[in-house]
Image (cartoon, rainbow, N blue to C red):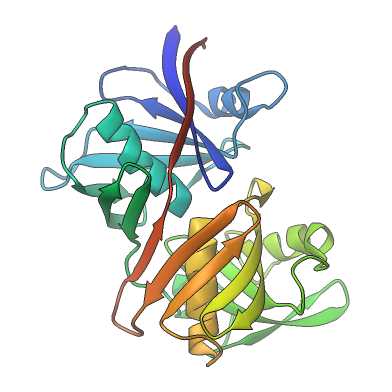
Length: 276
């Protein structure tokens, strides 16, 4: 079957986006792996799928697959691309769009052609709900990794994140520690590993080793999780600029009981078709 796709990115975190509203295809993990392959396929960090909603009160269903074929709960950079995609494909003309994900309903607002605001929902800090093995909730936890003790913040933004503070993201051992944190037994569903450098109370630098993908140029949920972890630990204010290798995001969190708001760009690279 010939399947139409759009290649997009959010700050270099790149996606193959599929419209399964007007196209019909039984997507399987082997198809995801083929699409994501950078040598034998199109190449991407994640495959994003637009489907009709199961809930009649929302506009679309949003599904996310990592390059290894596993479906995951949430992707913030992908959510911004999703909003731009459904408008560009004329699947909707709304500026405010509600979307089902496996982690719950999120709300997207198109500010301009290249700036999308995403209501990412409230962060989850309760260990068993992240999920993370800990006796009780705390601002930070000690995690034993490769013989060294790391202090982490543990947050779920619909997907689990472990945030480690580092002195300098340029020299942080992301390639060495990232996969070890990702597969740490205290995170039963694996975890995204964030490495955060605090520049000021209103600015951080961040690198993220993503679960099932590896290090990416940007991670929207990782940016949200880092700001929440830094805020809970008393290091950051409510509005923070997050500098990632691919560019910057604006993250706002008013504290417990409030959603995290992410604002940033979404870019279309090209469109095409592929035989699967």
